[in-house]
Image 1 (cartoon, rainbow, N blue to C red):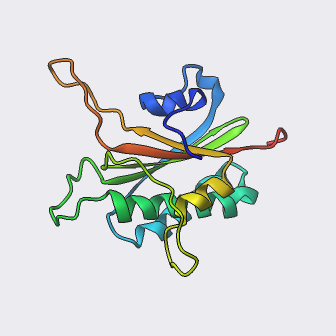
Image 2: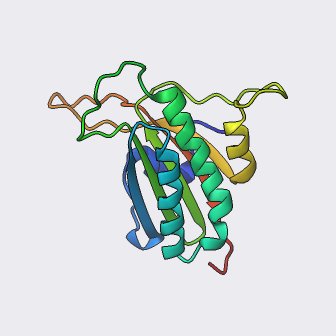
Image 3: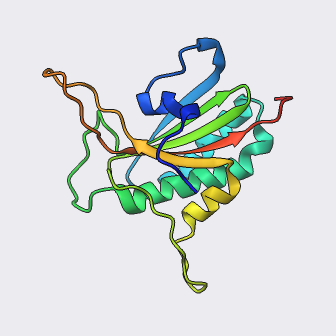
Length: 172
């Protein structure tokens, strides 16, 4: 089950790349509009990125997880009011990060509510997203999104990041 944090993913918590720059093989970020069509865009971005990293064989599992994380962000994390989001701060962002032995996909959204995996009735058409994320990734979790410090030196969480980790084979 997902956890609130992980030593291995501390760079995500800090919003920074790992201290050793040689440890990161690649990273890519995509901002997504607050529309359900963004899920298809997230899959296309994932395909292009994985192909560029020579990881096209991992696309099916990673794309399924990306689709679920983005859908959850759009469905559960966006405010219900119709105010236009700040163009400098898109509501949903997809981050893909590759290290030599792992791949992380992370979705940032504006909600501070923790994601909750629940049991969906057999006849339900939704409610299994985090179960799928858990089933297709090696681990998943979430943490509050880092907030830039204010002039007074204080910082407060601004949304959250939900991540899923995939272990890569030694030959990759």
